[in-house]
Image (tube, rainbow, N blue to C red; front, side):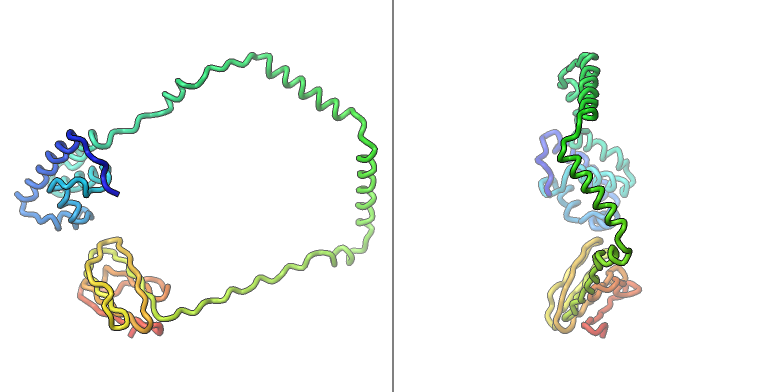
Length: 259
C-alpha cells in the first residue's frame, strides 16, 4: 500500500528531515545498506526516503517509524525527528463521541408512564391466571399425565432398548505425500539458490521474515550463504536450520529424506 499524496507542507518538512539524516550519514561514511540492516528496513525504502521519491513509500505512520529509528542509529534525536513529521502527517483522530452526544434528541418521558405500563402488565397477567382453562387443554394435560405414568411402569429393559446406539466415528485416511515439498523461513538476510529436479527455480537474497515453498517430483537441492538463518521444513515436518554456522552449505532432499 503506498502513502497518500502529501501536501506541500508535509513534503517540505519530510525533505528537511531526510536531508539532515543523509548529511549526517555521509559525514560518518555509513552506507545506506548498513543503516537498513540495523533498523530492519529494506534499502529501497531508505533510498526513496533520501531521494524524495515519497510516492514509493508506505503509509505516513511507517515513515515516522523509519525516521525515528534512522535518527537513533546516527546518534540523533530520532524520537524528536519522528514527532516533527508525525505532527503534520499523522494528526490524532478527532473524537466523535462529543459530537454525537450533541446531536442526540432530548427526549423526556413522564415519570407516570412506566407505572401505568407496569399496572397494565400486572392486570393482564392476573387475568390470565384466573381465567378458566379450555376443555381441550385440560384433556391434553390428562393424556400427558397418563402417558407419563405408563412409562414409569414399563420394565427397565424396554426403556433401555429404545435408546439410540451411538455410531462409531470413521477413522480419517491419510493422503500419502508424493515427491518432496520444502518450505523456507528466513530468520535473517541470506542468499539462497533452489534447484528442483536438476532445474534452477530460484536464486536471490531472502530478507528476514520472507517465506517460500518449493516442490519437486524426485529431489530438491538448496544452497545458502547463511544456512543458520534459514529454517527448512520438509514434507510438513518441524522446521530446522539448514546449517549450524554462517558457512555456505548445500543440501538435497527427496521423499525418503536428506541425501
